[in-house]
Length: 475
Image (cartoon, rainbow, N blue to C red; front, side):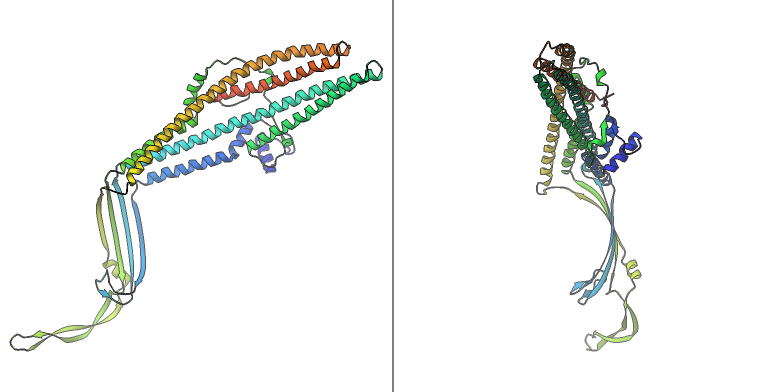
């Protein structure tokens, strides 16, 4: 799987050799995830299943045509259906038959069933779009978390490097006898603490990459095999939101596939209710059958002579009367082709079925269909409520992220200037290490807050763009 991923990424990026470090953009991650996500594949199978249900509903309008044959042997008494002879011995028989039937009218049940399956098919397509949207949002969050973790690692490395330089300078001063050894010990203790911060930041970056790999559903891939491309967030200028949450919600109502799928399911349930009610109506159908058969009792006979058979007596004289009858010899059953030709029969019929009582099957079917409709209507209302709450939350988060961005940016600017001044004073021994590290720690926290604010602002605004139908991009 690892080599497969490398080949895929290499094909996407056009990179060589395969041992290089791959830098993936958000669009490339999305392209790979949309091709391999298992939940998305399951949703696509549901679309295929719904499509076949729709095709079956279309085919239900066509006539049924069946043919068949049977070959058997009867033991015991019966009337042979092809010779009308009473048989007591073992008799072999064969049948060929064909039939067709066509429903002419059934209360529009088939029409509404077709509508029901078509709306269900359209809803399943929107379900796929919904899974894709969720995957895009989750992938964007995982992608930005990698960028955020990498930014924090960069900040931790910078702070460690600053402290390391201070340690080197202080060690030189201590060796020269210009500073007490306690000053060096304080700096070395701070450096050890910041080295731990770097290790923690590296672990957070690894975890963020692992989460991204899991979202991409890639197995057996080392997080060192790839990296993600960073957008120009340092050049990003925050702007206040110009749209209200209601405006975003009104735009999202006609765009979000979850709402569209719920609307299609209402239409499907309405058609299902109409189909269930249609089963109260009479059914008019046309049918036709053809058939033929073969029996061992249908035999060929040849006359080999005649015989005088007593017939009765002449009245008044008592004279016996004889009649001449032929003497026949059985030559065996008539050939198959002759019997099939002679026994060929046809039948056509128009059938009218009027439902009177069928164990409440139609009645309970209508009630269940009505419940399905009410459930679909509640599901739509639930989707709309969830969407409204999600958009309000996203709008509030974006507004808060904008304010956090501005405040964090001002804090970093102020603390950076303060830290530069403190660093100069620390080197001049005007402040002690405790005061210096306090300012340095506050700057580190402010830089971390600014990094978090940048990516939080970026992600929240992208969510609002997403709800308005704009593609997710970090460019």
